[in-house]
Amino acid sequence: MPDFIRTVPPGDDRERLTCPDCGFVAYENPKIVVGSVVSEGGRILLCRRAIEPRRGFWTLPAGYMEMAETVEEGARREAWEEAQARIALEGVMAVYSIARIGQVQVIFRAGFESPGFAPGPESLECRLFAWEELPWEEIAFPSVHWALHRWRALEGQALGAPVGNPAEDPRGMRPMPRQAAL
Amino acid sequence: MPDFIRTVPPGDDRERLTCPDCGFVAYENPKIVVGSVVSEGGRILLCRRAIEPRRGFWTLPAGYMEMAETVEEGARREAWEEAQARIALEGVMAVYSIARIGQVQVIFRAGFESPGFAPGPESLECRLFAWEELPWEEIAFPSVHWALHRWRALEGQALGAPVGNPAEDPRGMRPMPRQAAL
Image 1 (spheres, rainbow over the protein chains, first blue to last red):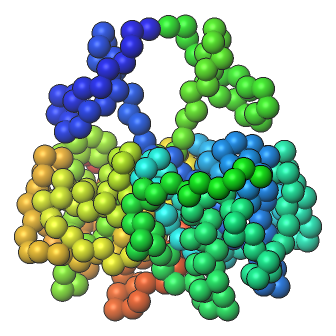
Image 2: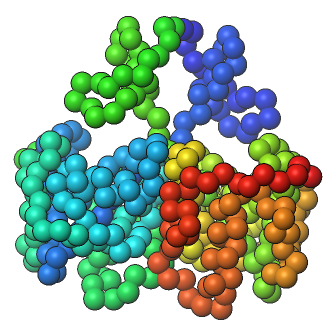
């Protein structure tokens, strides 16, 4: 296989990964993450990551959407895989763009469809946290912060149109501040 | 280059395109379309497609999101590329999943930021349509129907949380009914 080169294909306006022999263009596309803020009685479900990146840090049940599913199916599947939780989606709470890494996150507000949860293979543990107990120093990603604060701002209210990124990081360009590994 | 095969990689739970020699997994991910229902004075901007699929049919200014942009930037870029329109986004109106083709559509409600529009290279023409004038028989894709009706239902109202697919096609599995080419 020849090495792909970055060149602007005919009729295009930006560089693409292109095969110099046959002209095949390997388009790169942003990836979609689907996830949920799942709560019960004011407490929020978080999972402690068993995998890199950010092993040992806390995150929402969320992950890459698969090909033949909907965003809703993906969000429910991730809650099952990561927290063995059957969840009921209420609606989209946020659509975040992490332009730095080519990612779009569709985050739902959800409750439990049936009781119970337990860590799946990608989680070290899962826990319900009251707002005051949330492990802010050990959160895996900036967008988890965003989603938790969005959830809090909407607590007890109907979902409005989802917000985008916060004003201080409109393009999702800031990496997570360095923290000690857990 | 050896032909990739479909096999379940170790630790995974579904078939992936995998290189039988080196084990490289070519993940396939859903693609994101960003677009807008742009209106002015109750009239909606549509573009008649100059490219396949559905050449000659009418669509919203929308297209595939690029890697280093946000959903908002993508929606504005597409309005510029397809309709030479500078638009002002109001918020997300709908998040549709077209599971049949592995696509997620993030659709905004928008107005014009500055006056004027004209067909870009991928459009044969662009036009503002009053609701009663919309070319229902010549709409390119089911999701354009969905978005137009969602826009109509919200006319004059604040945006709520975005809806997902309509109840009659919750997974985006139905192709567009056959129509005569234009």
